[in-house]
Amino acid sequence: MAERLRVAMVGNGFMGAAHSQGWRVAPRFFDLALQPTMDVLVGRDPARAAQAAEKWGWRESSSDWREVVERDDIDVVDIVTPGDSHAEIAIAALEAGKHVLCEKPLANSTHEAEAMTRAAEVAAGRGIRSMLGFTYRRVPATAFARRLIADGRIGEIRHVRASYLQDWLVDPAAPMTWRLEKERAGSGALGDIGAHAVDLAEYMTGLRLSEVSGVLETFVRRRPRPAGPTAGAIAGAASGGADAEYGDVTVDDVALFRGRFASGALGTFEASRMATGRKNSLRVEVSGSHGAIAFDLEDLNALELYDARDASEEQGFKRIIVTEPEHPWVAAWWPAGHMLGYEHGFANQAKDFVDAIAAGTAPRPSFTDGLHVQRVLDAVEHSSGTDGAWVGVAGATA
Ligand code: SOE
Image 1 (cartoon, rainbow, N blue to C red):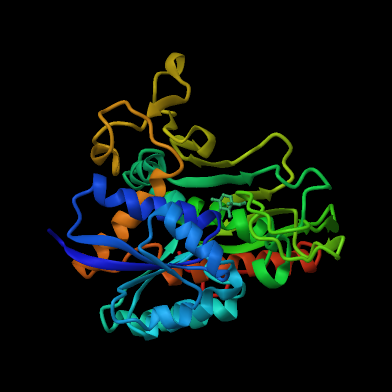
Image 2: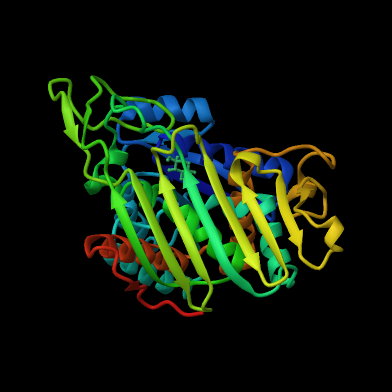
């Protein structure tokens, strides 16, 4: 039996459920050098935390993250709280010598993200690992697309189209949640889902954005506050009391921007939670000098590949079904040809984090990767505040 890796998770919302599934399932499908165990679930409300721990399979629950991150019988702290608490928890956990997995976006501000990155670097010197949960890097099709692009299958990259579209805010009666409050969420569609589009486009292509020009818009500026806590998947925890009828939306509903990569390639980006009819559509299409690749999360077992060198009468996008043992992570799951879903990314992510801890290597995406995405988001906000002027992304290199 492999040595245990004792995990504590802070947060018990939607992402808590997703990460719990990852920790639970990963050791059942992958041969891991360390055995992750789900030791403590931490939530603000003791009764809700206890209920979630019981449901998701954590051994115990707590409402005091500060006490938990100091415990000698915890090795890993997994942070799945809203962005306003990431920095405080991650830095305390790293200083206490715990490996840290943190949900995206890294933080609500560049300032916090820089402090987290510094703490991660210091901790790395002591063999402590940290990783950011841009989980869509762990969808087999996106990792395979990265491999194909790195192998030169589409040639030199000229432009990229990335969008993340959802529609859960189309209805003006959709209730207030912490995701609509700048103080708690940092930004709206931009940070919540635009961050994924940026990270995935950069991950698949290996390119880095160096300047952006964007616009943010909030179409519905006041929303009804729910009477009690909302447990809805995307709605998250309610922030208002029963007496307050409406709350101010202080984040963007839609973020659009164009970007220039350090290589000279161009990109267009779109993040919206008001894209009527689009439920969870994360699309990245990359156009190269002799081919193109397209991925769509709503069809996550497939990848479209176009080769401009095919005979002209046979040209067209080929649909690759990414369910074969040769594809990343797939061999550990079901027999060839069987489909994977949203939750598998969280198990693949847990596996990779455990592997890195066991091997003593630096996992990606790192906090430094998250800091870069945060700087892109900041540059987009800045650009939007200056009529779409081009704004450089601090520290971006090719
Ligand atoms: C809500 O918009 C959300 O849950 C994001 O916060 C996640 O990061 C994304 O994976 C799905 O949508």
